Image 1 (tube, one colour):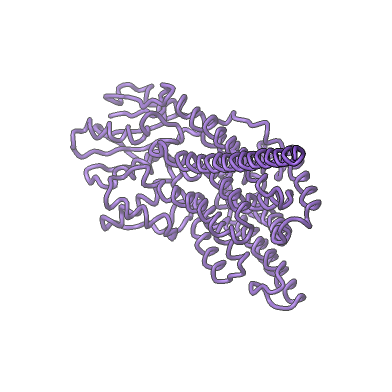
Image 2 (cartoon, one colour):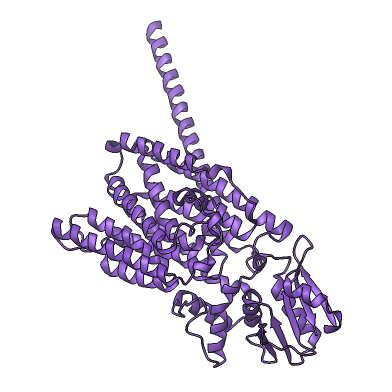
Length: 518
């Protein structure tokens, strides 16, 4: 009898112990899930905030940003519209023009209006990278894809620019999605829309071709193995010929850095994704991120590839079906970009020509990362992506916002800024001093002429003229130039030629703009 009581008591003890363990483990699991969800939502939250905060003056007003706003105002007031920009860019990018036109019906010209379409495009790219791809690569991988799309520095920085290349990432998402879904109509429409944003969108076409080539039942290429391969070869050849032809046009050759800045082409990919090229372009040319060394990037990809092949039998089949055609397509896509623009297009001041690479490369990395782990550890890649996204956001704060707030920037003069956008501040200062009388403002060069022209689009009493050799400012006119530049120094040598001079200061208290009243 005593033995039975002891055995019964022992069993009850085991039940209580294991029951408590199960409950404790369940609570720990719930706590871990809540913590993970909080971190993921936190990353998305700060990625959105980073796209919106100080949008009206960080960075400074770049001349190219003004063009759509000027044309929208011309349409509003019945003035002639320039259908072709000075950079040979046509006015057919409806994703940009329509929102800017509608906003300017209700608001005065402002820099945030010009950048609003880019913000929307960036946020839509994040949303669609999850919504469209979770059925293709699985929910965990789609979460990683959306996280990186949200947190990559170049994506955030280009969401803060009001120019065409900022839209390319959104079109890249839809082009690759429709290619994976074997939707010819979707591919064609997305590609045509992407070409209205930037001609480098043609470099995405090789990825479409290799994805279609890997599918036996693809409708994007002719049926039959021989016909399919022949069709793919012809299309790729035509694509490369088109890229070479585009380069012969030499439209943007003057924008590229000098030859001594060229480094081996593929070695710049790490710098493009870490944000180094963007930080150097916008903030400070001296910024250098050692972690972007190509050997680290190459080593990481090789290590993930080893694990990918090791776990090939225990990972979803779609990873292998996507990874190999996507990787091959990326190689042809890089070749296409190289043929079109040369080795400089992913260097600072020219990386906008390589923005089309961002999403397909991100997708390739995510598929490789998730394929490197077995299904039993399918959430480990999300944890890695969360940490990577976290450090990317920290890096953006450290290398972008902090320097701009401290100094106003040390890169191109057009990006320099202060507590208020310098060109906007100078324009309203002139208006206040003129007391509402008709005035003429002569701006020295494109980077000043276009922003001033935009701010004055609704004011018929203000004439904005670009200062050229044949320009003849007279007494009472205003002249705006960059402080310390050739024109500023020349005017200062003749103090009798002007009545008044003042300057606009950046965050560091340096004179950036010099404004003269003759």
